[in-house]
Length: 459
Image (cartoon, rainbow, N blue to C red):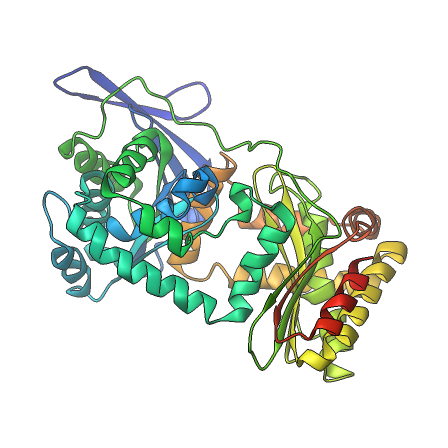
């Protein structure tokens, strides 16, 4: 036992005496909600949250790599690699991987974002050792054969086509490009048809070896689990694959980003023969480590986070101009976005934009009344707790927290921080964020005169 209350465990290997450090990060009552972390020699971090009252467990591995880490020529490589890790290892074929989890009624998937990638499996608690073995095998023993690369290329091109057929989804990629331009954050996670066609098996293998080192990975598990057993099983799986090549290696620090170019007053229009026009009006937001993010969360909820929000009431309930209208925030290591989305008939675009712009300007100048802030705080607290009701959500929370912040916050602390947001803090962040000149992205069948007028919406 060390002076800070953590435990140090040791295990003798053929190479050296490897020492693992285990800490209790959040101490739950009667063990429920207890979060523990073990850092293995070689830099692999393992975090778990115990919930004895359930019969399931979710196991995931988070990789410190996303589309932000790609050069223009490698755009789409992270997502391509996500697909390929399901295609087979030195121990399992693609069918072996999928059938192993299917045979126990589990579910397995992965997702790629701009700053991280996650692979996970959700199973009965008794089948957790199987999930650990399968997912760890995928992450450490992927073959990335040329034949698999060529086959999966077709699937990824279909995924790109599917996204482009959904303008309500595609407009958010367009908005990222509007805000960040030809920067890694401004490029699509899926890549483009040209970049995906140009990626070779050799380039993807090099990308894999560079970014899937244990120092870049966080293992997370939540549910009816035993932390020490999870650590032993993960360690065995990684040692079996020979993944620990440097016992003295330390985990890499959370990403701090670099100065990202953000724009103001830009307008990008994409002509499509759609029934609706899809619109995003927005401006630079906050980095995910900014202390003002709690106030921004309350502001976002009050503006466009539900049926009682200002934008929903003004655009849909009172005028019926759109079926879907909402606001959202995205936080990255060094920057962020705040956006307002609406889908409406092309003839109503200018009316919708004027109402949204008027609401944003009014809140930027005068802030929000206390009753709206109180309602937003309650809504945000409730949605936070309800969103953590399954083991998959718990695994996501602790895995992402370790990878992106390097620390854990209990649910009670999160709720307390939301409750502590004051009207002055909301007013201040509204002035800072909403007071900026917005940018605009639109996809739809816009006529030339309409397109010309859209530039007035950000003037």
